[in-house]
Length: 579
Image (cartoon, rainbow, N blue to C red):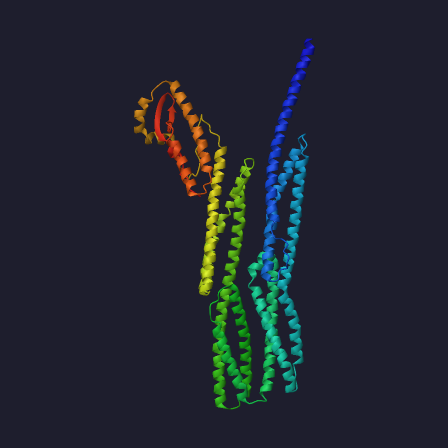
C-alpha cells in the first residue's frame, strides 16, 4: 500500500507539473496572439492609407510638371512601403513564435499571410508605376535633343545647296528657308537652355549620374547648334549681300534702321521684373530670341558696308548705325545676364523649398502616427523610432536661413506681386516648421510620460520624479536640503521626537500616500488639453497634491536621530505648460 500511495503521489505531482506548464503555455500563447493582432491591425490601417492614394489616374499626364508630380507621388509611396519592411519581418517573426505553441493559430495566421501578400502586391504595383513615370519623363526631356538631330540634318543640306547660287531668283528661293531654319534653331536653343536650368530636378528624379550624362549631351548639342547657327547666319548675310549689290544704299539702309529701332523698343519692353519662375523663364526665352535677331541684324549691318562707295555721308550713317547697334547689343547682353542669374536663383529656391516642404510633410505624417499610437507592448521601440526621427530636425533647421536668404534674393528680383507670393511661401514654411516643433514637443512629452509610467518606485531607497525637467537638469542633495532648511527644521525636531515605532508608521503612511499622488500626477500630465477650460482644470488638479494632504512635507530619517525637514511637495510638481 505504501508503494502504491507513493506512486500515486509521484503521478499526482507529475500531472500537476504538466498542468501548470500547460497553463503557462496557454497564457504565453494568448499574450503573443494579442500582440500580433494589435500589430496586424495597425499595419492594415497604414497599408489601407497608402492604398487609397490616387496611384492610377484616368488621364495621362499632358505636361512635364504633371509627370514630375506623378513621379514624386509614386516615389513617396514606394519609400513609405519600403519603410514598412521591418514591420513585415516582425509580423512574420511573431507568427513563427505563435505557431510554436500547441494551440491552433490558423485564423490569425491566414490574416497575417493575406496582409503580407497585399503589401507585396501594392509594393510591386507602386514600383511598376514609378518606373513607368520615370521612363515617360525621360522620353519627354529627350525630345529637344531628338528635334535638334532633325534640324541639324536640314541645316547641313541648306548649307550645301546654297554654297554657290548663280542668280537672284535662286537666292529668293532659298533665303526664306534659311530664315525658317534660323527661327527653328532659336526655338530649340530656348528648350535646351531651360533643360540646362533644371539640374536640381534632373538629379532628384534620375540620380546624379544619369543627370550628368543628360546635361553633357545637352551641352554638346548646344555647341553643335551654335556652330551651325552661325554658319547659317553667315550664309544668310552672304545671300543678302548678293541681293544688296543690285540695289542702292538707301534701299538697304532704311530697313536696317527700322529693324534697329524695333529691336530697341522690344528690348526696353523686356526690362522689367517678372512675377514668378515661369514668367522669368519666358522672359529669358524672349531675350534669347532678341539676341538671335540682334546677331542677324549685326551681320546685315556688316554686309551693307560693302555698298558704301566713297560717299562720306553714307560712311557717317553706317558708323552711327553700327555704334547704335553695338550699344544696344551690350545692353541686351547685360539684361540677359541679370535674367539668367534671376532664373538660376529662383530655380534653386523653388527646388530647395519643395524638397523641404516634402520632408516636413513626410516627417509630420510619421510623427503624427507615432503620437496617435503608443501601445504598451512596443512603446520602447516606438520611442526609439520617434527619437531617430526627431534627430533629423537640427540638420534640416540649418537649411532654413539659407532658404530664407534665397527667398529674399528672389523677392528683390521679382515684381511686387511675385515678392508677395514668395513672402507668403516663406510664411507658410515658417508656420509648418512651427507646427512641427509643437508636434515634436508634444511627442517628447508623451514619450517622457510613457517612461514615467514604467518607472518602479523603490520606497526603501529613493523616489524619483521626472516630468518636463529642463534639459540642463537640476540636482537636489540631502545635504543641500538640510543646510537650506536647518533653521526651519529645529522646531519640528522637538515636536517630532517620539518612539521609533511611531516614526516607522508615519514613514510608511507617507510613502503610501506619495505613491498614490504620484500616480495621479502621471495621469494629469498625460491628459490632452483641447480647450482653455481643460488647461485650467489640469492646472487645478496639479495644485491639489500640495494642498489637500497633511503629509505634504518630505520626511527624512537619519539613523537614530529623527529630523523633520519641511520641504513642500509642490516643489516636486513641475510646471505644465500647454502644448
